[in-house]
Image (cartoon, rainbow, N blue to C red; front, side, top):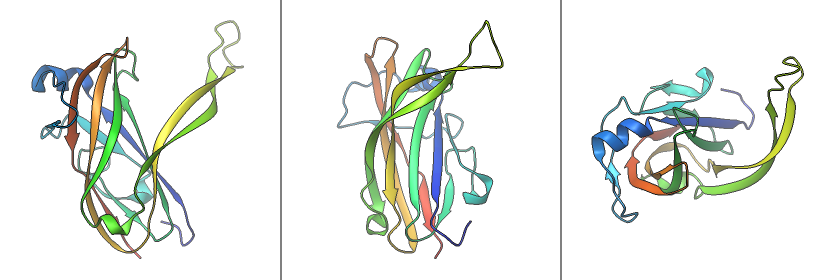
Length: 170
């Protein structure tokens, strides 16, 4: 971890197909099903930012005051078959240690392979988003994210949640 402010990116990869198969369809966003199987959600960050659990369900990240944490999610198929979409952050302990996470919509350029010239990719402008929060003071934050799984047509297949945590190490 750096001695200056940094951005800590957390990628959440969700095994959407197995979650639907094992936990069923759940159409109530106010009563999501808890995911307890540690083999279905993978949270990944840079090695220097991970205290423990990198690429697992219970990622503990180290952050300092004024660091920014950004969460992004995807399905294991990179949203080709099903998509995962975070829709609610709930702090269960230490919620005052970070600013209230919010989704931020952004427009970005992303590369796209050019089959006729594989070493010179094209770019396309897409809308993207991530959840963002600023670290306010030291301590541990226990939280959970609610997320939904959608099919290719954007139809909700179910609502779910799981509970990682953040350790702020100032």
